[in-house]
Amino acid sequence: MAAKRKTPVKSRNPDLIRGVGKYSRSKMYHKRGLWAIKAKHGGVFPRHDPQPKAPAAAEKPPKFYPADDVKKPLLNKRKPKPTKLRASITPGTVLILLAGRFMGKRVVFLKQLPSGLLLVTGPFKINGVPLRRVNQSYVIATSTKVDISGVNVEKFDDKYFAKEVDKKKKKNEGEFFEAEKEDKKKLPEDKKEDQKAVDASLLKSIEGVPDLKAYLAARFSLKSGMKPHELVF
Amino acid sequence: MPFKRYVEIGRVALVNYGKDYGKLVVIVDVVDQNRALVDAPDMVRGQMNFKRLTLTDITIDIPRVPKKKTLIEAMEKADVKTKWENSSWGRKLIVQKRRASLNDFDRFKLMLAKIKRAGVVRQELAKLKKENAS
Image (cartoon, rainbow over all chains, first blue to last red; front, side, top):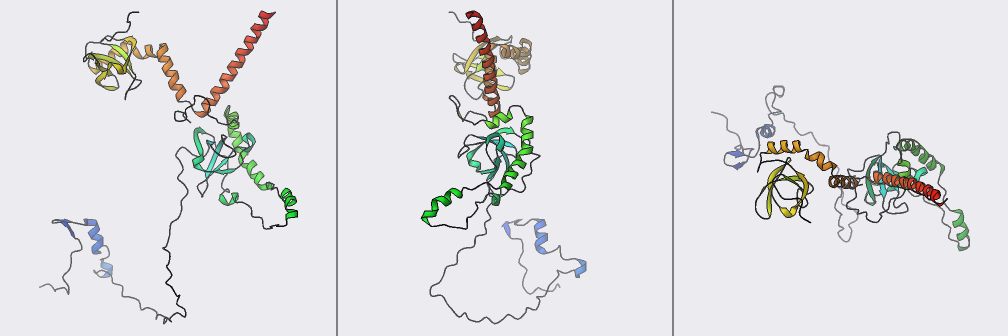
């Protein structure tokens, strides 16, 4: 007579319908722990007895109870991702800017920054657009691509484009206007050097394609008879 | 002004409306006053209203409702494709399609080419005017 167990074993595999269990053979193998019942454990499922716990320090009652119950805000573990890049925008694509100071300018796309904005450059010598951030929604991607392999854009990220905070705050009215005139911000030399470095190899690949330089120098505009929904970019 | 293009078996037509817009099809049978049975090498034979067809000048020699193989052979023999592509109508359609598929860069290059050509023409014209004036 087989020894009776203390409690009758409940099946680990509930029935979906009579004759069909919820879990497959491989899942049941895992549930029953057959993967751990090995000869080296003595043919039984290995048991780990609970380790003796360190004695918990006696909890003192708090000195101060707030008058009203303060609600704790719910925990938010969301990590924002950069915007999904359109399939038509790849490094080296020529983009048409649709808004802002450089509206209509055709510009070369370099990379997507961690904030989701697109890093873009004129090149500066061709159309006056510097290294700049641009939102994907304000851009038309053309199918023209420029060879961008010689360009190193590793060092550029959103912090590079952060505004410089002026520590001094002059509040005297008399000095205000003179200070404004002196305060016209000059572009730091290292940013100019960065622009030149990025543009140097770009210019070479652009000049390799006939008419591409003039194309990037020209602005895009809708002329009479052009239907944007029928245009192929 | 008599009619020159007749609906007949073997008449090649251009579809001008519907799912098969722009395709060249052959009239293979007439169903009734308004509809024709129509066939092309790359489509399933089916009926089409005459209003959806524009007749072309091209005809091929086929029996009524030929097998697909016979139809394709007859089209090859009559050389429908080359005849169509060399006709002025066919060439216009090809140019239209090409223009519609132009890239933004292509349109820019086209603009430069047009300006260049206009410049050359104007130079020649100025030369001729000068010769005539003197």
